[in-house]
Image (cartoon, rainbow, N blue to C red):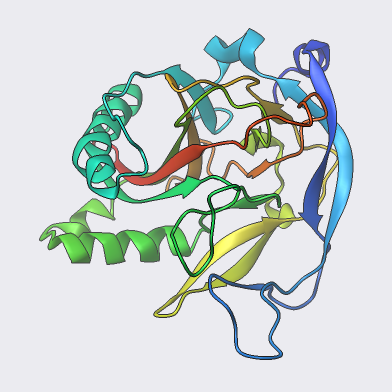
Length: 283
């Protein structure tokens, strides 16, 4: 079920292009590093579709992780420098785990990695800072949600991992600005209930030491897109990237950065962090 169509249509919006995967019979492949000679960094063809992206702020209190697959919340952090890897892990990881436990009622939360994004400071091969991703995607699939959870729990030496994975768990991203107000390349999120299972295309994500799997997304006019303009450092956007429950809750909230037509030409580059977390619900 999608958000009430009249409420959705009445929200303020911008018109922007989002890049969708063109339907393909072959499984797409994305490399996270420079691939071998002659091999493209990313297979599959993407095409832009111009559509309306609604401002979610007027209905922020009505949005939830289990209904639409995302939620915006106020959240202060004591992190001084998000470019300091040690401080992020030492200070921000516990803060985010506490936040998600409070929001979801989870019995256990584990942050397992993060990405910093800043197009101006990103230097592939020299640092780990990344650029915003401008292609509609979801970080995990029905398959890789389980496989990544097993890898994370194994690395932690969790003795009851098999028991944990028999009960409901999810993968939730915690996305936030880390400097000033977001003025360009904001993040758009799609109502998970407006995405048909056939819109999701499993894609290999190739690392040097392993192969993960994400979803690329094909265009469907039923998709309901939202964004939260002018996000600030004290706000966190929670995004459901996987849910083991198949009987009701939102499971996959696709998302993408986009070129905001209201951004000024000299707008500073977006600086953001996303944490990826395992959230284990009470048995």
